[in-house]
Image (tube, rainbow, N blue to C red; front, side, top):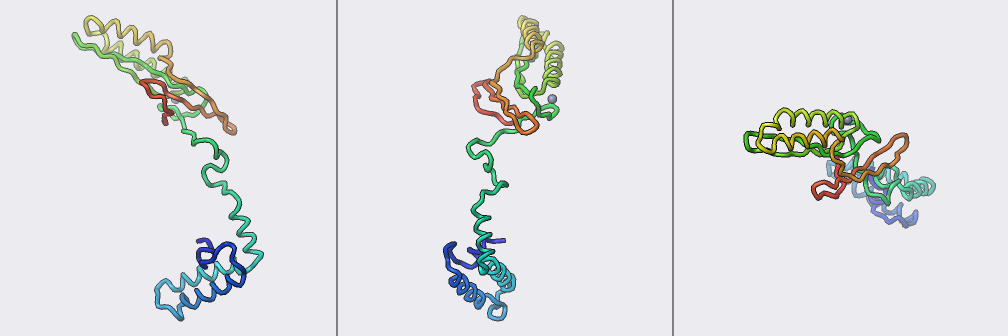
Length: 198
Ligand SMILES: [Zn+2]
């Protein structure tokens, strides 16, 4: 429903008689008896319901009071001063709890004389962090060794880092929401200090 003041084209400070004059004037223009516009009946219905609110001083006062109250459905009603919080969940299982952390895991790929080191950075829960550590260590163990001379060295380094839980690259702050914790993670890896959304 549109704002009745807009429908009747009157200001919020209009007197009751101004509202009545506007209502009768609009009715004369838009009533199906006077107008051939196909929307005439719907416009008339809108004008009549707007006047049903504003034409009655008690209903008008309660409408005005309702409009003056902040709407809880509007974003920022409760946390106007805070910027919107990113929803952080485990990238693997989707869980959202206080064990969420960002970590960097290493993995190594070698072929004869070429050895490449790669990283995998994301936010995981404690269980998935363990699984990721095992996964990237197995991959390094499987395809990381076979490069001379750095393959075995980098593969050992990667497995050592991963066994230690990956490299920790974050500043983590925990915010309490009703009945649950929300963890916000600020990534500092690779020069990215912005809050990243997962
Ligand atoms: Zn998980």
